[in-house]
Image 1 (cartoon, protein in one colour):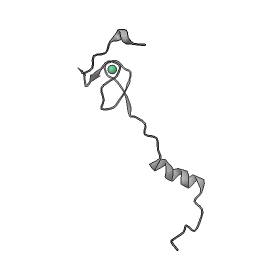
Image 2: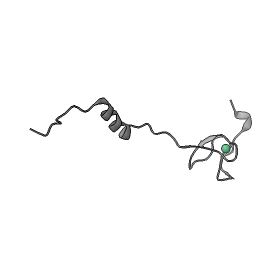
Image 3: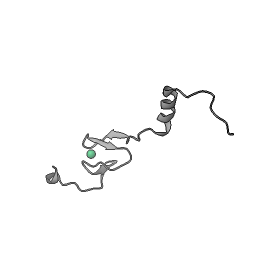
Image 4: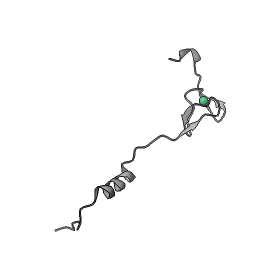
Amino acid sequence: MGALPKRRISSTRQARKRAHYLRIKMPHLLRCPQCGSLRRAHSVCPTCGTYKGVEILEIDDSAKK
Ligand SMILES: [Zn+2]
């Protein structure tokens, strides 16, 4: 027989353990220095299309919903 746990792991300990490997991956959000809206870190801003002050994407202002 294999090794068995002596005690039942409490729900708090189980939840704390799960928080490490089952945590929801939240995108790291930062404020865009160009337009001030939230954008993901290390990525082009979806609102103004700039990254580190350089325009990469062309955003149509008229196409906004
Ligand atoms: Zn922006």
